[in-house]
Length: 343
Ligand code: KG4
Ligand code: ZN
Image (tube, rainbow, N blue to C red; front, side, top):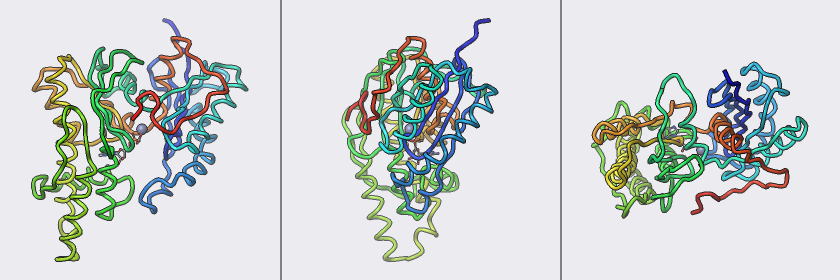
């Protein structure tokens, strides 16, 4: 049996400090420290995020090594998120990764956060045995990005369509804020929606051509609707919370599913995959399985902890780069806006 290298992955692009150790595509540990501090502000406060990363990074990496059962001297390479994301947050992870790689005298690998979300589909998991086969369609929907891609190879991803304004996760978070729910709102809406009627309220939404998305009009329509109803009845939100959550979720997921269906009709692919935090949404997961059945294609849907930000996906991307000896030097600097998939 050949032994695989141990890759340490580090993720710090937003409000989760995460470290993972993988061996090949097998996850040995995947430690995620969330930052509760942002909930009271209704969104991520960049300065507070960097400070929390600074406090979390050493214990998180330490725990990831312990859980994996390895010493730091056994790590073959360190892969870290270099962007896109919050610059102050990225700097914490990148400085730490550089320092540790220098001290251990091992290769350093830069990872693009969005590519890593897609490549999370190649990690081994007990829940899902299948992995995507190239070329495959991939819908990435997170708090910062929403795009449909044709993935030709690990590092050859072609954008077929993307949002022209808000990301799908942002739409969930903003709707949740209007309803007075804590940040991040996506999981809260998902939970409440299970008890609600998705067809109860109708909001207007921009119809986008081709495979692009738009969510800002929906947010405005939702905001005005709730505001007007509150004028008539101050208890409108609490009396209708489940239906409001179910209805807004229905609109967001319908838009994502319609574009995936259109892509499946346009591009004759044998399989598709999902990635990004919104891929944790129960309705989206269900709709994607329905599409797979309807078009007789294979759907790869990562287990929920691998859809939201985590370092195992960073390590996985790092592993594929390690195989190609695609190492980086200490001079490389983090970037905040998408570089590989520019807007
Ligand atoms: O990928 P991710 O962890 O971070 C970014 O790269 O942005 O995605 C976070 C986003 C947030 O907007 C969050 O509300 C959303 O994913 N999200 C969900 C669910 N879980 C997380 N949205 C809908 N339903 C969920 N269950
Ligand atoms: Zn992400």
